[in-house]
Length: 415
Image 1 (cartoon, rainbow, N blue to C red):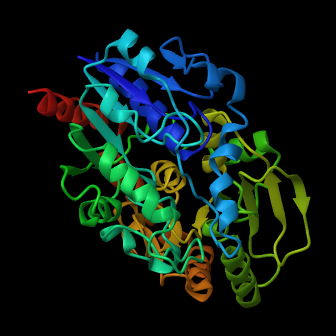
Image 2 (image 1 turned 180 degrees about the horizontal axis):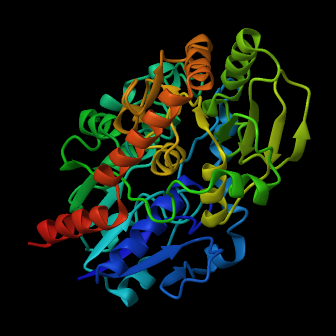
C-alpha cells in the first residue's frame, strides 16, 4: 500500500505538523508513505516539492493572485479566505509517484485547484483542518453562518447582499468538479466531522471522525526545573503558556480575550501570582506592560523546543474562538499540563471539564479567568488534571495508534 500525503507546507502551521506526524507514523508501522508539498523546510527524503513551472517560479505570489477577486468586496470582514482557482498542476507528480490513495490535508495558497481532484483517478482521503473544503471560500464561517449547508451566497464574510456572489461561485465550482470523485472525509474532531456531514458538499460522502496523532514519547512530562533553566525562565513562578501563530493579527486566536482574562485573574490574585509565556509571536523578549510579566519566546520551529517549553509550563491557556483539534491543546495534554480553553469547536474532545482541564463558557474572558485562578490557587488540582490529561491522550491520539487506524481506513477504501 502506498499513500501520498498532500499539504501546502511540510512544517509550518498546525495542519503541516499533523500531516507530517501522520507521514512519519505511517512509515513507522511499515506503510509506504510519501509527502508532496509546495513549501519544504525539512530534510525528509520522502517529502517532495511541487514542481510545476507556475509553482516553482511564482509560489510566493500565488496567494496574492488568488485573493484578487476579494477586491470586489470592499465591505468584507474576513481574515482567512481562499478561492483556489489557479491551476495547481501536480497531476504529473501524482502519476509518477503512483500512490494507491491520495490523502489531502491543507492545500491552499497555490498548491492545487479544485479541478485537480477528478484528474487523478485515485481514491482521495481529505483530513479537514478548517471549514474551507466545504464552504464557498471562508476557512471559518462568519458569525456562525450556516450557508455551507445549502450553497453559500449572500456571504456575511464578504459583506455581500447578492445570492450569486463569489462564495456561491466557489461553492458551485467545487460541487461540479468533485462529482464522481472517490472521496472520504476525515474530521479530527467530532465537531468538524459533524459540520462536514451537515454540509451540502460533503454530506454525500463518508465522513469519519479520526483524531490526529501525536508523539507521546516526545511530548511527555519531564524535569520542569531543568526545562526552565534551559529556556532562561524563572524556576519559582507559576507559568501560564499561550501558543498561537500570529496571535496579534488573527482575531480567531482570541488574543484580546486572553489579555482580558489575565487582567481579571491578576486583579483577584495580585501582580506576583504568575507569569506568562508566549510562543508563536515573532517578537522575543520580556514585557512588563501587563499585569503579569510576559516572556515572549518567538516562533519555535523544532518540536523538541516545543516539548521543552511544555515541560517548563504549569498551565496552558487556549483562548481561540475556533479550534478543530488543537495541536497546542494536544501537545499540552500529552505533556501533562491542564488546559483552560473555551467550550467550543473540538476542544471538548481533548479537555473534559474539571477532569482533564477547564472548559470555559464560550467567549467569556471572565470564565477563562476562573479557570486560571483555580489552577494557580490549587496546585493539587492542577497536578491531578494534568496527569489525567496525559492518560487521555495516550488512549485517544497516540501516534502509533492513529497510524494503524488510518491504515485500516485506507484498506477499507481500497477494498
